[in-house]
Image (tube, rainbow, N blue to C red):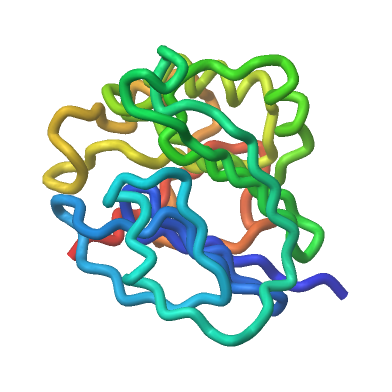
Length: 205
């Protein structure tokens, strides 16, 4: 019997992937307007790049347990100019409990064919949609169409007073899709939704 995989959003681009096999935190932030300070625990912490709204490893207390998960990295850039503006970025592809999950970090450009080929058959795609520092709504929507994941969760957008003022809200991204679920919680279990863009409830204080 396969383990349940729970996805918890802490705001911005910070997510917890939680199963009986591993607890993984991706892109913990030091401080982002409108979100509470993080105090998390995990078996493994991953950071897409070394900006302090994504690499606050000190906010995560690590266990001594080995995370039973496979983690692949797709090397990308934080901007459309080969990293000349904001440096490099990693897409983390996590496989655990039979589920494939991709976290795009601060992806800043459209993806090449070989990169897209590695992002097929995803159970979940976590993708930035707010623009300015990352890809915008249209580019994010194009990547969703090219990869066709079962579930998409947008991240790195502005929601009221939460998030950076210069980035967009989630609405321009949602306008590209017919099947959108506005979930009433900031977490869900994989398998709870299918063939949908799922907007998680803002976990801000």
